[in-house]
Amino acid sequence: MSVMLLAMFNGLMTSIALETFILTKQMALKEAFRTAYGMSLISMLSMEAAMNIVDVLITGGAMLAWYTIPPMLIVGFLTPWPYNYWRLKKYGQACH
Image 1 (cartoon, one colour):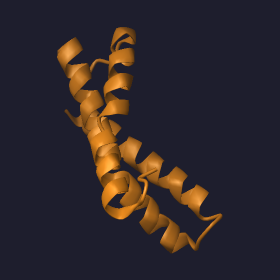
Image 2 (cartoon, one colour):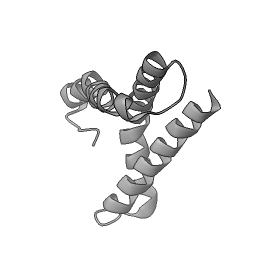
Image 3 (cartoon, helix red, strand yellow):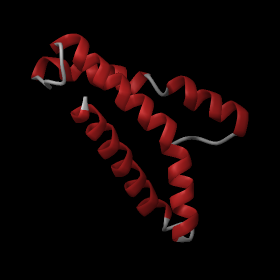
């Protein structure tokens, strides 16, 4: 379980760091961080959780194997779509 939480934390931090870096070319660092945090939190947590669940369902635990990667990537890609669609419709803003 702690391995899955670590993966989720690392995925979220990496996403926020990368988006903050990219956004600093357009805005101040503090504003870039707040924007990146708002864009990534729900999408990345849902994606990471879905990928971890698929791994557990296929392998019986957090034991990443080569044959779990394709289904994990597909599920991780599709999971944030409803939230991203809702955010686009409600706020006119993309999450990424």
